[in-house]
Length: 260
Length: 260
Image (cartoon, rainbow over all chains, first blue to last red; front, side, top):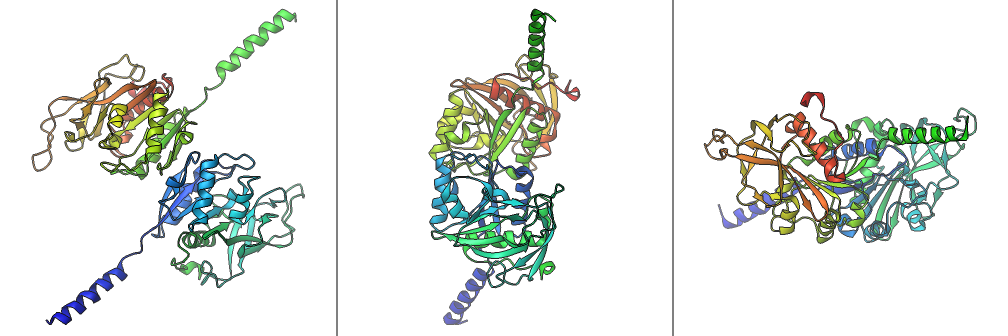
């Protein structure tokens, strides 16, 4: 074999083995431990949904007070499963570290009631693009259709135009002007609480969106109230693709056959 | 009813309802996320055995870097399921915060291979009372008998004189002089690795001990290599009672019928 030939072969094989190597896993840190929802049940499900794609390595911190930039730095994306409502549970250190983490180019996922955390902390409202504040509510948990409103976004690309969800449907969130809405659902005004008071709004309500914060990326899903609601293929796929996008700016996780 | 009578009744009922109230739960923070053992399987098992006593409320942090005194302060006891081996994974902030936490009167539980962490950090060796260093080892996992050597200690009081365990039996630890040994096991010299090496030492090896560190309390168990080994009644009871003692200085969890 000529020297030229062996060098060529060496290059071909090393490029081939590089291509065959899986990309490094996206490192996710779930922040939880306080919520008006069942965080102890939903957190293992979030971990499982993410890890079974093979794309993520997940860690969980259930005590966030005193965490700081050294805690978050090893990760690509923080996932909030956290709602302290009107009480600011975290001290200043993790709050500032989270803003800096995203501002400086990393990712954040706000899952379901996490948009109900940190009342009165304006930077948080800007960070996640839409929060549950005074005007927010939801009609009773019911089956409805989620509509993809931007089918060209990397997170939704290749998904069917709609998917079925049985879940809470939030309305009246305080929205920031810079969000990019990926999915909405029609909030049926005939779906009312038993006393007839809390009904759907008769409008298409935004449920899934993204935004930029500094040079970082934020993915927000209002879906997934409980373990049962988290079972839908549409919830799972948007969560894993949204988390990958927030972590890396790209989506490689394919649309599975049951959602094509 | 006379005024005297109603006052007496009020006192009686008040004291009665105080006595009937469960004491506040002991707050445990498990520190894990790095280990040469299967921390992902053993951590939920530790949480479950603690919480099913009804005496503990457990949180878990899988990323300890950047944690600090604000992270640990809300807890009564830290439980280490962590082994960074010769790599000092944690930065100085959680390391100092852990020492201060115990030194100032709270508790620490060192579980199994956690005593193999932080090589070269002398203060850690003093904190946990006995560490897996150059001279340490163990013969193959096998069935052995754990002997209670101080039946009058708060943790062992009321337990039978011995319990059965199938586990690793660690030997050759670098022990500190101030530890109080609660249990040992005879390390059978006929129990060897397949190549005939790594045999038992033919000595009674300490497997469970306590010590004071500053004004705090440390409980150390070398037992519980994996989920199967953690299922023995003796491991479980010493772990929950040891954790309660480390946190509060007292033991209220009773000895169950299968260990009487």
